[in-house]
Image 1: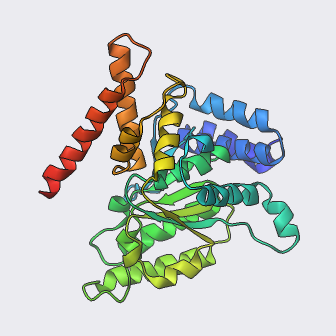
Image 2 (image 1 turned 90 degrees about the vertical axis):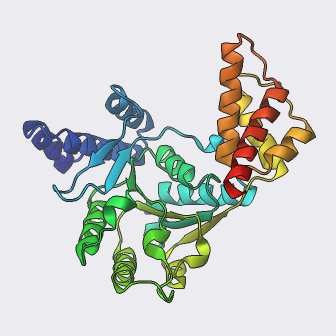
Image 3 (image 1 turned 90 degrees about the horizontal axis):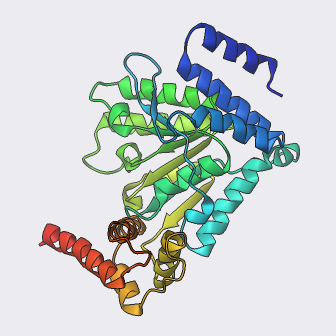
Length: 320
């Protein structure tokens, strides 16, 4: 059951009418019970907390000047992710090591918990963070880079310190999305001194961190990242645009509930291969909505091809 400190924290939060601290403590209890093998109890606690508004996101406010973390409780499953078999195995390894971290610790080994994900927009980087949080029954805290990086000297490093304090004290999955905002190469000519100091601070905090949280940094542009970053991370995942097999699997995943017998033509697969995973998912959702509105339980491939062409036309106009 919950530890004495957790129970006292829960009572204090209720007495102070601090709903955020109450929910955070309850989530810690849920995670604690899950680690003890009480999976159903952990799920029940999580379900109770999520019942009012399941998808609603909340800001975790450290003080009146800092609202840099956005908390959510994802329910995305690993089976929803379409990536290469190698990448899938590496994600499963991260999950397995975390769930068995005490066993690893008993042999003097540490589990992977500092992850860098690189790839084009829409290839599944943010989704992977959500999946890791969901599979481990932990909250996802997304670092809002626009609220973290400020123009005032020293202020960003202070906020960064607060975030790493939260990482230490509140177990969860912490996502630094669009990480290149602070992770740019310190050797780039136009890089200002303040950003170098911010990156140095991040590297120090990352190296010193020994919490039970998982830290994930995601970027669309690996080439500008400082090389010193790579040795600070336990694993680096590279995401690419979908292959033909990925397109087929993604279409199957999206349509398996609404129309499980759908088989895409080679023409559709080839045309959709120019789009990212996220864009193909949106097209599938649009096609399902069209089928619902037309009172049919079948997916029209011509409709799908039309939606693909619409999306491609938007890019051609934007780059023309």
